[in-house]
Each structure stands twice: as structure tokens, then as C-alpha cells.
Length: 148
Image 1: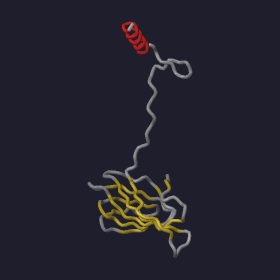
Image 2: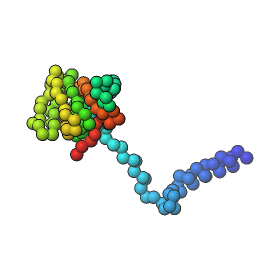
Image 3: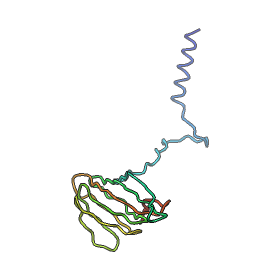
Image 4: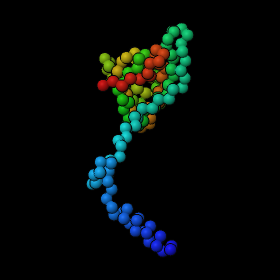
């Protein structure tokens, strides 16, 4: 009895391997479906260290963030719905802010980005750029907004 069961399982397995598959529409696909597209990972990462409501400016939050821009990376062009105070911890970069000449950044540099000002940074060095930023943003608003 066992040889017949084994033979039947082998025959069914072989049949499954050689029988063309049929999709939900009853068609025989000739090409395997493509894998879903994966969005490329941004070279810019942000870590929120602290968020606190400001008692002296009701309706606004102070947000402290550590940002890192990968070697050779360019941060996507974006803006913030509030001011950003930036201190460069490590690395070198070129910083382009709408309405201003590009600036070269190095460790120890500090600058302010006005609210709703599109900007982009490019890592020009051999190590990741590390920044410490403090934002003053209206409560409930996003930290960053992509811009064209």
C-alpha cells in the first residue's frame, strides 16, 4: 500500500512542477510579477532627542534633534514651519538656502534657518555630517516639509 501512496505523491508533485500556473484572471503568465518598488532610503536621518512645549511662547514646541547626513549624501530639499538653530558637530558640507549664497560648513559653525525657507545640504567630506538642531515649531505641525 505504501509504494502506491509514495508513487501517487511523486506523480502529483511532478505534475505541479510541470503544469503552468494560472493567475486570478485565468491567464497563464509568461513573466513572473515584478517585486514591489522600494523607496530609496534618505541619506539624512534625524533623531528627536527632546520635545517640550515652550512656556514663554504658548502654542509652540522646542524640539532638539540630532541629524546625520551620510558621506556623499544630499539631504532632500525641504523646509520647516518654524525656525531651526543649527550647530555643526562633525563633518563638512555645502548648505544652500533659498535667497542666499551657498555656504561651506565645518565643525563648530552655527547658523539659523528662518521658518518656511527651502534648503538643502550636501556632504562634501569623508565622514558623516553630524548636526545638533533646535526647532521652534507650532504645536502639531510637522518637523519638516518636502519642497520642490
